[in-house]
Length: 240
Length: 240
Image (tube, rainbow over all chains, first blue to last red; front, side, top):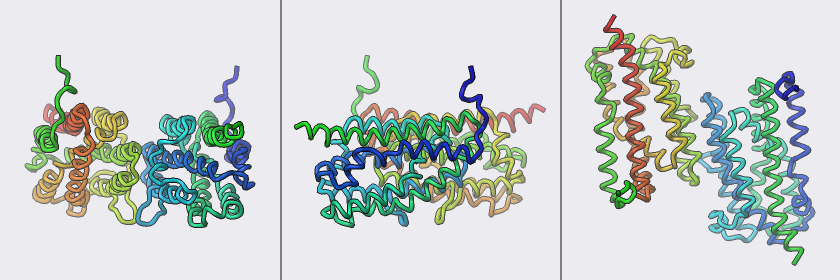
């Protein structure tokens, strides 16, 4: 019986095509909760549920990025990747993604401290986000980087989200959307850098397959986060 | 039988005194190899052996610091600690400790690429340095930070080293000592910040004891590195 690692190495183009195909077909832009969001059909409470729960995901990003930094033996790679931590934690020059998200939380009418405490995060959301950190912690560097490649698909979703919120939820206020705006260009840059690194460093078919599997797992994590928010704020609410 | 965790919490002053006492009495400034170094009794080959092996330790620093960053839930702590990674990897404003160490390697007559490859590092040095990364990886945040507190004792050793090298090994050249110079003030700053964090966050006697144990383990790691260099470059050489 032929195992997956006995397959020949994919060419860079084949490998990129496979990553894109798996990513595009599984990305959470197609989730029913996003459909409702973009169609302007979410209530204020449902938007709040999403903002509150997604904040826990946001808090995991600098942690998983620090784990990725810890896996690299290359100062140049570490210098480049550490910028992602600054993008969320803030520094002299970079934005401050976590603070911007808390601004969004206030924009949708949530209490900043309550959101920051993460105490109302749904258990399933916590499990999924913690699974992301575990995936990164337990994977070799190139596979851990591959799990970030959902960034490639983020700019289009961000642009769509900004337009939809401005149209359908004007009460949120334009300033509160600053995080989404900051991500359009940063996600494009990060996605391209990540893809280049993964293609150059996945040096065996087994590593290529592990990279694809990590990207698939990551799409499952993002999808499950929305499943949980959708179930608790839309499906259960509609049964009442 | 009374376990160690049934002891009462140490006051901040008692805890700091215990950390200092354990650190001072075990710090590698008292190692025989350092005695030889400071007395000007090392040959060029012996200095080279130390520079080459210690470089592996230097390469572990940004890795263990990224692990420490990954353990914190506090953006402000992560922003502050990440500066230590920049101190070694370099960025727009900070120094570049690893590059400075490779400059030192050239200053003592070693090939820069050979040192950077770490392929001639002694096995025991590798084990000890890898044990440092494992200690940090497997410890809670405050204990991982405590393992860095040997920084408190570094400024005096650095000052003594600079004076000794200028006096006894003038052939190395003053520029090659830039890394040591950079550490005098940075180690003082880092040691004080680390101590403040450890004292404020070791909130039980069990955590206080674990912090002391981590500092002791760290002194063993630094000591063993010198044991290995001493045995291979001084003791075994003298038997020939």
